[in-house]
Length: 627
Image 1 (cartoon, rainbow, N blue to C red):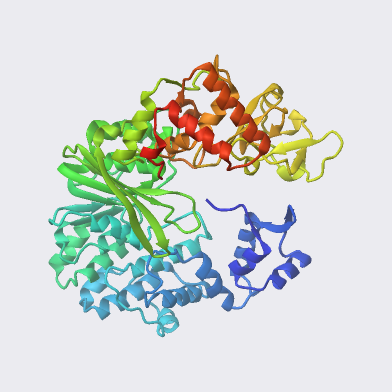
Image 2: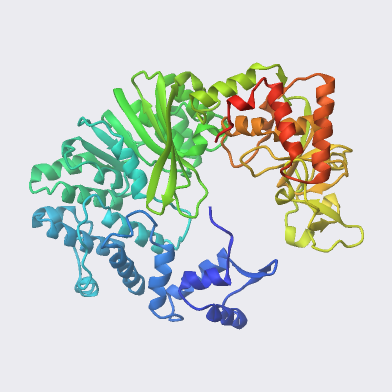
């Protein structure tokens, strides 16, 4: 999820120093830099070496720590930046970096401060603290810092996450649930008090944000991180203002350090299971072998995905009328890799809600959803589409209810409301063909190193090469890059005849709708511009391109598929209307004219769209292709 390098500007911001200092270090050989195009960049491996050397040297003053930490070690949106504790935590972590301290010491100091402020008795505080041996040093270092108890805020969790990331030398790669995403799940819980469980609770941020009226004895949480579990217990002790040994026993009994996926311990059935299960956990061969004995959703030789396993175990751990609400990557709804968990869900539970959240994690392209499953039969699915308005605000733009027959193991995506779905059914009802088995596909060239293979100058024997950014509907821009076609110099390349075909279509690989351009010049392309050569008897490539580029097909695609990449499987399933030869020739001629004129919008484009609407028996005056 992170870049492989930093620019000088990014490194200076990361370290909290001037760009001039970074440039000077490069000259002195303290930082090894390289060229990427016109930019000087520093590989992440070099950044890590530098970071480690700085932590054990005096190359920078302490002001470096606070600036650097604020940008890289504080998980954004985990708590509100408006919190009175945010800047205090930033400073505390800066102090931690300057001194040789144990994480448990800092956590214990902060936890004791918060528990004392909320009147938790001394004996209970001592029982809950992860480290009871606080030295004079830690008290002196942090005595000036004052944390304020903020209801529902995982203050201690933020400190722990930040310290752990700092100690592990990992500035990227882990992303934590923004508080407003947690609240979307919490706010949709039923009003009745039922046994609730977060099976990967971490420091308890989901449980902490439950209504105060929720009975303590009904709150459960598990995690494999022992320190996180200790913090979760402290969080609940503060939330419920516990004062007795009986309450402490409830917390210690309900919040446990166990592996939800592999534990042999008796885990009680829950009425509600919530949370954000781990994504992309690594498992040893031995663990995979053991997991395969207990999980239906592990198929084939591929590595199991941890969030799939959590979903399966959650469904099995629910009461007969229970429900699960998990924050998950959107890929679980449609990717082939997750078809087995969708099949398990269809057999063992019912999808009742899907909320599309988009990219809720800062600077990370990983669209998320909230998936709600019910063990009690549900015939309808509520679908919501959210939009992130500001850093700490997410609002629902659309909501609709559809029949549950709309999903199957191939895809759980529901992107069209009922009116839009009628239009999709109308499109599918006309006589049509697809490209499955009737087209050749080829990947554009994978150079292995664009910098060494491409040139901005057309040398003798070099030719223009198309990129995805060059492609528009119907045409492509004149190439801005050039390459010499020597297959053995490339990392991956299709057979040359595919590129040299007398007639082919380029399509943009990264796009949210079909974008096809016509080529009859034998032009080569990079893998951001892939190739389609239709072979449908009686239908020209120009006709097929026109239909695929139409407003109608864009509507169909955007309400059927949801992927940042235009995949071959999606293209092969698009319904291309059959027509008579005269209509096909008329549309083909118009499409060629548009391609030759190289205009993205024109009177001819409007005429073409109208002709294609007629093919599907749609009257444009009676409907609009809305998003």
